[in-house]
Structures are given as C-alpha cells and as structure tokens.
Image (cartoon, rainbow, N blue to C red):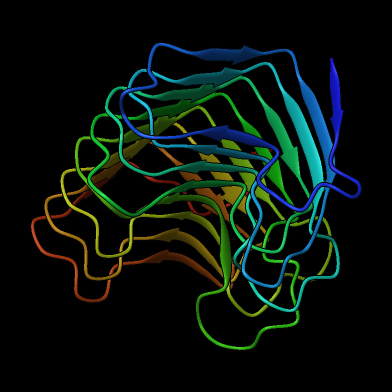
Length: 220
C-alpha cells in the first residue's frame, strides 16, 4: 500500500493519545510528505504498543529549512517497536523518540539514510535514530549513514540527555557524530561499529555510561 503525501497538509499517519493502542503498520510505502515549516511526520504516534515494520518511508519534507519533519516520530506510549524499515531522505530524524514520557521502545534492523537534510545550521539538526525522552529504550542491529557529505549536525544514533537507554550491534558511519551520548545518564553502548565519522563516539557530559567493545576502524 502506498501513501503519497503530496498535497496532504498534515501528518500522513497519526495515532493520537495512548488510548489508541495495539496498532501495527506493516508493509507501507510513505513518500513525498509535505513541508509545513513546523513539521509534518510520515508516521506520528502517541499510542501504546504501536509497531512500524517492513515500511519504506522516504522523501519527507524535501528541501525544508528546519529539522522538524521526521519519518517515524514516537511521542509518549509504551512498548512501541520500529523494525525492519528502510527510512531515507528527511530534514530531521528518520526515527525520533522524543517528548512526553515514552518507555521501553525497541528500534531494530532499520536502515536509516540521509537524515538532517535541511538548511539549518548548528550542532544538532538531525539523526538516524534519536532516543531522548523517557527511558528503557534499546536500539540494535540498525545501520545509519549519510550517502554524501554529512550535514553539520548529522548524528548516527543519539541518546543525548536520555537515561537508561542502550545501543548494541549497530553500524554508524559517515556522520558528524556516530554514537552521541552527550549529557546522558546510565546509558549503555556496546559492540557497535562507529567508523568514518568526524567523531565516532561522543560522550561529553555522560554519567554512568557503559562504553565497551565498540569498534572505530574499518572492519573489512
């Protein structure tokens, strides 16, 4: 099933409030989401136990000046899963977990490419995966990279200011920061490949961080 966002001045898929729960989005293509200036999302969810899987989401708010439009945006909600998706070309985050109090999200086996495609300047304007609000989230077996010269704020996986979050067995390359744990609390990054990023692993301000067995050299 294909959802073409051309001319749709709204979030393309919208799960409103935690009362709308136990929903699965499977095998969708969502493309050409409009640029609102304040951010339309391909999928926006506040529900519990919402799953996004096997989807191809691409070309979200192409040409946007700012970073407010994303492929998948989880806000609030418990036990959500984002898995086995191809997510490409958006001005902000291909997967964002931010706002409210989301808990125990699982992000796995996604390919995230060419995020942070905006004309904004600054140190933090987009990432493959952002886990920032709530706690208990885990990201594993994902690949996050830029196909061209990375934008100034393009991060692979970011847990900036997050708490009790984990990233295992991911590959992040050709970003400004590969794994970003800035100002995080009790987070865990192990067994990842972070290679060919301007800074492979950024930990300034992190407390209680477990940082082990991560590789920062070419594995070929």
